[in-house]
Structure formats: C-alpha cells, structure tokens
Image (cartoon, rainbow, N blue to C red; front, top):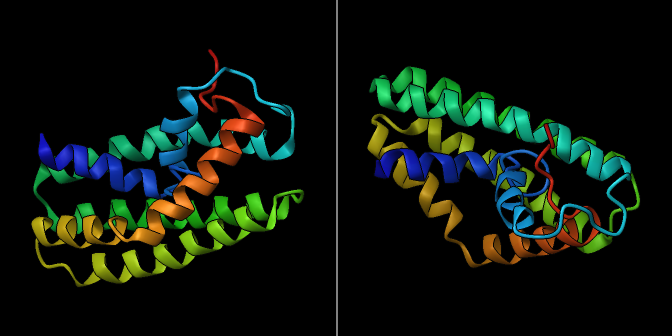
Length: 164
C-alpha cells in the first residue's frame, strides 16, 4: 500500500497541482474548497477540470504498473504521465491571465518533470524509482511553488473535480 500512496502522490506532480503531475496536488487542495471560485468559467479553470479525469486515468495506470512489479512497465507509465503533465502546463501558460508568480511556479514544475524523468530513467528498481521521485517532491521550493499554484486555483476555480 505504501507504494501506491507514493505513486499517487508522484502522479499528482504530473499536474496533479496546477495542470497535470503539478496539478494533481492542486486537485487535492482545491477539492476542499467550494465548487466555484471567482472565475470557474475561465479557460484556465476549464482546462483544469478537463485534466481531472485524465489524471485519474494516469494514476490508475501507474498504480497497476507498479503493482505488476515490472520496472519497464512502471517507467513507461510514469514517463507518459510526465509528458502529459508538461503538455498541460504549457496549455495553462498559453491561456493567459495567469499571474507572474503562478507562471513561475508552473515553469518550476516543468523543470521538475525533467529532473523526475532523468531519475525515473536511471532507476533500476521500483524502490529506486520511488525514492528518487519522493526526494524531488520534498524540496522546500516544491512546497512553496505547489502552495502558490494551489492557492491560485482554489481562489479562481474552486474545486477542479469534474461534476458528473
């Protein structure tokens, strides 16, 4: 179970905060707020809401890959999620009207994805992959930038979980 909790947190990096594996952490923070923010209809918020179900799909794939015990399968799943996260960060930056501090935080997560990609590619075991990814998410700057994006998303969008 520890492995799946770590992987879901790592998956959250994918924007799991602001827009994909960085947007996943934001999803958790925003889910505790009211369903609507100051501008839930904005292009930025619509992008995040559409991202939510995709993030869930990646989280399931990563968890299954790690459960299988196959390093190559797990590596491929995580790297795919990182690529997806970078794509969504780029889209979020392109929609405009994102404060400079949030833009900076999102760019930090793109850089972090690059570091995570290298760590995942170098890892020869699932445990090594987990350790490397967990270490990157413990940096003080990670927490600061995650909070910047989380606060912006919670205020602007409220909860980004898609309603069914």
